[in-house]
Amino acid sequence: MALLPKAEHKAIDAEIKLDEAGAFEAAIATFDAIDSDRDIVKPGAFGDAVVSVLPAHDSGSVPLGKVQVKERGNLAVAVGGFNLAIGAARDWSAALKFDLANPPAVQEWSWGFTIPEGGSKIETMDGEPVRIISKVDVFEVSPVLRGASIGTRTLSAKSHGGCGCGGQKGEALGNLIRDLRDDNDLENADLADAAGISVATIDDIIAGLIICPPRERLEGFAGVLGTPISRLISAAESDGCDYSESRASLVGEVKATVAAVDFMMARVRETSKTRKADGRTLGSGVQLATIQLAKLLRELEGLIASDMLPRDPVSEAAARFLYSEARHHIE
Image (cartoon, rainbow, N blue to C red):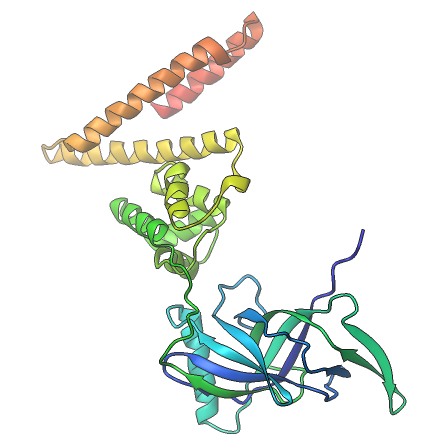
């Protein structure tokens, strides 16, 4: 089996110009110069690549923006901008502006890449080996503390005019999660705990800046929001997501539904108790929805009795005991 190309990174001293809308230009490499890794990058190696901007090569981060790598004389220049709708991007933009406004600038840039087969060769210069790189597959550009390339710097940075980095917004999913969160008197921290992610990521999902979160995240949301995962998937798919290849197993669907029903029943009990103490009852809409759910649960009970319980006496007795325990827990 062929090995995948090794991922590498190169960093460079960054001279940066930024504007108020987050647009910038940064020289990320100097052609035909030996850098600190004893590599020489040749003109044409980048091929006008379009890539994401990541903070310090953090592949787990939401992209901060987008750039296209262009050749200008002996320089490879990343032209693009930060997506200032994202908090971390605003922070990086502000940090770079501060660096420019308080010389000498110390910010450097780095780029992540792989070298395809035939994209490099080893030569000897002044008695020392040098790698000549004629082709790279760039997958990201990052502002970093220290880089390897020669002559990397921020050339300009603009904040108006934009860069078109925002992309598609996940409005349907974000709006649904926000509405369910508010209906359940929850905080974003509650959603973050349920899905195992940061509050900042929840903020960006609700704002529509992150679309198509992994299915396991939606399962976590479904449980704490008291809604079927199918409802969240439907909203995400209306934003253009495709979960057809990540379909959960039946047991996963059942467990997610049990968690949602358990959460919902606890809320109904609590709300009913509170309103009863005030001489009130549950609203008609809640009552109707609860009755519909009870009807579905009775149908499920019939399915279990007719099709799912084993027929031999010992197994049937054990199954009925477990079923009774489960029903007692629900009630």
